[in-house]
Image (cartoon, helix red, strand yellow):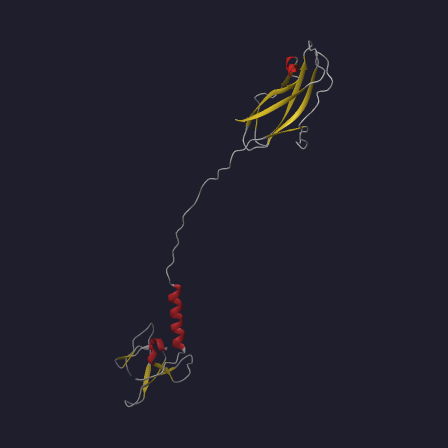
Length: 213
């Protein structure tokens, strides 16, 4: 009998052979547990299996010049390599990003004859009026921009030019505010002076301005 290092359990083995040849070792241990026999240390690649391995016995040949036959030992080495790979260190760092998006401001309005703003209007008739009379027209103004605005109305380009002495245009939405995409109703009114003379037809340009508020 010879001594053998312990690797987690008691081991029992015997030696069969002579001093003239490599010792034949039969034991109840795995090749991984064989580390030192008769005071001599052997590496794993010096272990050669001489017989198949069953659940209880292992037969190995320890010689000076031996081939390495990877059976159970290779499995152990492979597992060792896998465990080494799975044990690689890993870490993660992160950084947060944020910012703003500047959307250019836009301001535009449209004038329509209907509240759904499907029919744009560019001209209309006040009808046939008498001295001292008046006429009103309802229009719809939509802010098609993306900022709020304040509305103003002015009249210009009278024809004939003397018509402005007898005709007056007003409305009910002066300095009114209109939000982006909002639609408001406005009423324009033309008033004829009772003292009008020499004018039988006329025209004018009605300007509706929107200023960002």
